[in-house]
Image (cartoon, rainbow, N blue to C red; front, side, top):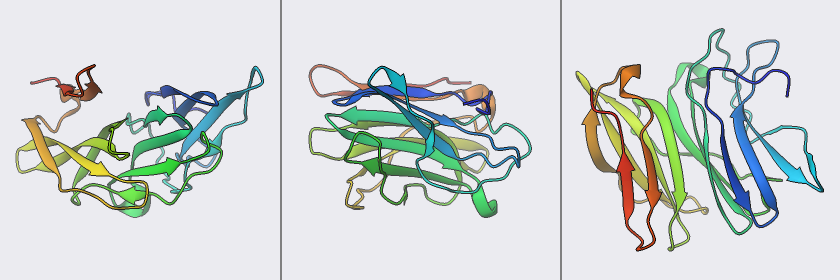
Length: 185
């Protein structure tokens, strides 16, 4: 892809069908939607949108997507400011990233983005994002199922709302525990 948004981080995962990469695309009209490409028969597919948000922004939002794979299921989380409304969203694919369902909004209405996602043994995904609060931000997580059901949000920690707080991340260790990492400013 010749027009990748070059300040937004990319992410990759390996599905049963092979590797996938998600990234923020950038059209000539400055539309910055999230795209996916897959390695099929030794060649990368042309990038296709996970969802057409239609976010037009003439600057880099420095806010890329996250992807997690489990067999042929993918969960892709991302931030968008389409229509002047900041949202953290997740969409699911059951065919290795060929098709995605409609996005599910996970935030509480003041999203800053900086998302991460991982699969849980329950068949749900855990989505993490930053939410703006008065004078701070909270790192939040929420369990989301591919059918649209959601659990309540949980606060991981508070941090700065500024870019100096970085991009929180999470992994699941071999014992099933979730480990969170973030920058405290």
